[in-house]
Image (cartoon, rainbow, N blue to C red; front, side):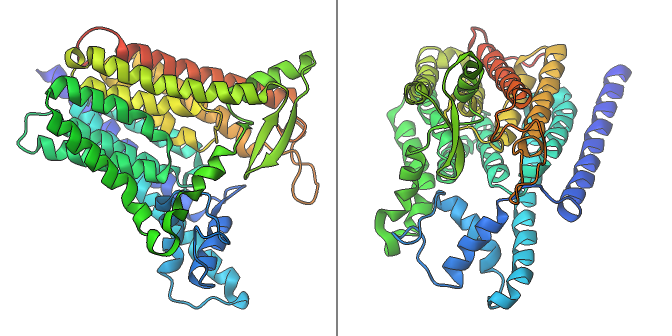
Length: 445
């Protein structure tokens, strides 16, 4: 009894230490840290065009390459500032906008941390402190990206959806309401970034075989539709279906330079394969005679990935239970970036952290710690690449790093990129095997 109390006390102390570390690191990121490369000035320009210059977003003259929920987050920091814009005070207003945008993302960051802790404490309380520390370290390593992109907001929504799904599996009179809320949140995730849609067929398959009633499935589809389409309705009075125009932007993207498939081409370049890198559709893409075929292959892999999880849900969902279906959905979403032809470094903010709670539930203690450590290695390799070894020259042509990935495709940076991609692919494969194998979901000791 005393040993159990001592262990619980130690875990509680470690958890509170993680909270302190979170507060300290976030204070530094918000007040002292300046990212080398930031998207916030670009967001600011779009917000000024909409609010101060009265241009209509998603119109033919003002295309937005982001889904509506991301656009709302882009707009909010300027919308709440009553000061009138003019060229003379632009620098002052941009500074205010930057602070408010980053504070907005910091709130999502704190919310995501709280949700992960709540999830871990409900699923495997003894693993909560380690998972919390991994969150703190991972997100701190991603400091250049954390508050200057939208992905920590997506992480918050994904973890909120996971939490709602877990609550829906518990014996509670509110279980159906939690389930409906989980689908609404998943819909909101899709209105922020399309990739989480991969989990919808799996969750519906699980609902079908476990509950064995048509009504819950129809309600689930309706709730997801509300969450996914509601942000689009905001723009329809002005632009009709113009808010769906961002889909054309993404449909035209090729093999992004950090993707797994681009890594393959970069490895083949020394063997004589013609490989070039071009900046198109706001990203760097690798082009070669194999690019088009690999692009189509990547799309096929994503379709297979989603359908394979859905098929497992129909085949094994009833035996596995809804909690295991929820874990499978989390792993399915985490695997999309590494299997897609588009992989931006900020995607790994949410892709790495989504693996923590399934690992806490399914892996033995030493393997859980190993996975947490390897996730940090993935983050470190990613940050070494972007922004510190990504570009070889600044805007004035001055050399920043002789071993940069772009535009020279130096072998050192390419080797780090390939290592990062293979490592994360292995971790996704590891968790996929753990979550889909036969056997009931049990909390390891």
